Image (tube, rainbow, N blue to C red):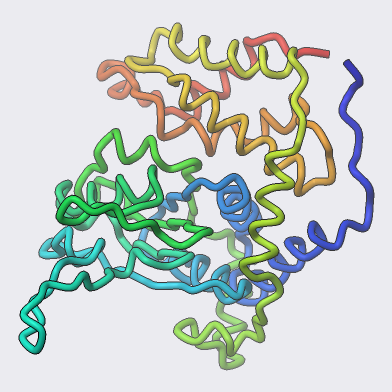
Length: 325
């Protein structure tokens, strides 16, 4: 089979998503990798989980991305008393007609910002499961489709923080990628303060000069282009070997499932398209492996006590599995 090559340069659609990254950069400093990861999630028709301590611009990142796209956007602030119907919607009695019409919840949107998703109990967290997997909501036996495209960007604080709940494994598995936002280095933090000193207001991302550069039609066209990205048999075998290696790692209790393998393929295709390739290479697989798989591993308890983490295990897997030439 022919080796993958660069796609044609000057693709207006691809260039438009390059401008999305530039627009987000007007408000968010030093998080270029997270911005790219979010765009990959959107184009691969997946969802993104952002983890970091409070104050590292998780919410600002999502709001800035939404502002750079002409997509309908809603936000849910997850709290301990949030009910499932507050997310999906519910039947509400209408006294004037004596009926119970369905009132749509905030999940009926293109981009859903689920803020601090792990501050609500598992029952409410699971209200997102059907929406994320099936792109629909079932209420009173009736399935109601969600808008297309539909993209969940959820933020969470580390589970060690007070008042947080561990996300159910089934829900974690529905997130295509998990991105970690660390505290910024000194120079980046200085740039953040400089922008605030110059009048930037995080609650109003438009004040940073962000303008929408893509809309629904462009997102759908880009998603279709991503699906058309090719994959050689040996690269697919490489993904399988990586997944099997996680299951055999001595410090891992539960390795990556076949769903994780297909998720890595989808993310790699999105990254290949964004970087101008018409087929994925091992480099694209390696670039997306940590964000796609870090939340799918279950580390053995004794290994966790010794400080072993998912990222470290995945780095070892990358070093051990033979790369196709």
